[in-house]
Length: 504
Image 1 (tube, rainbow, N blue to C red):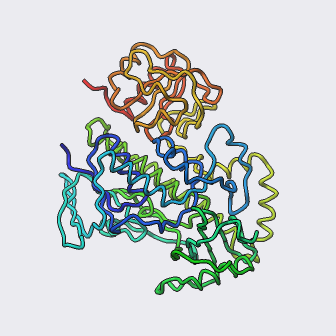
Image 2 (cartoon, one colour):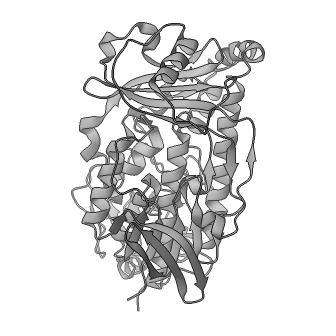
């Protein structure tokens, strides 16, 4: 038995990673400084890729009761035409992040994760045998030995600082408030509903996160943030009035928090046995859902690679691909967000530019490009395979229905009850999907020997996936696509690269 993976921080990133590891039977301990789960979670919505990440683990179904339709997807509060994704991907959704936290906590614990609240990492050492972590609690300290340590403890990460990983910042800071206000949307004036760019050069949003409960978010760029004082209801109301030009109705405020700061990206996401994930590795203004999307993609990218290492089948260098794949995406997402902020402030300079962008968005190619950028669907990894026509090698497989799903003959296969691409990923393993019935016997034998890592299934051909077969990694990204007969060598190489040598 190997020592557990220790996760510093029970954030959405930390809990998603704990769930990923638990799916593989890896022992995991989550150390969260807060003593209890809280509803004071600032996020109010999820974008397309985040919705699909949750759905591919079967977690979205338990959240549907808290979901509301969203206005759409935007780039710098300029709304995009979503029809390009229709039928191929899930829409964005209004969903308070506190509900996601509770669902992830429940699912991770049910799978065997040890979530310890009121426990925090205060120091650690590492060597070839693992990591030794000092843990502080209200009752004193203790030490914990683990195989790896993952920092998911936020922007002010103790683990990142102790690991000596730089976290440089750039660009102007922003001043924002987020609060839950006890009022129904129907009681609001039109200027207080939804999310919008404000003529004064800021951002305002108010959406329902529960019955007669509104999440209000403000962002301003010419107002100094009194970071040394707690925000007040009066401060929130004043910010809303400045942005919208109208007073928010007098209603009880359950809580109000301050947020904001510079865009920051760690210069590396690994130091020996220590990894960074989520806000400890990158932070920027939470616009269009890119920030949470980036965090959860870190978790699903790292989880199966740590499991492969600890289970003994991961190839040399597999863990290094975590930084190689995720760090460029962090830089890209941060740049994309900063570009959106540059279209919001300063108001006297951006107004003509926003007018030009509105015209450009009428061009289908521009709209689709920014739509994929804003939803995270443009993420493509270098998987060592050349793109195959319209099949998205290195990118996520379309989130589409499937017919006639059954185990591939000669293999253990996956669930025969699957009706869509997301269902195939519930177990967290890789997926080999045969759509043409052309998988040769030697390949089936290899897949059977990899049955503890790859589910091999057969389904009827679909016009949404134009290949005879595809190999999909546990994080949902296509590792290979093509004809398993004419490119048997390429398929074999992809299987070995991402899933190791067959057992025995």
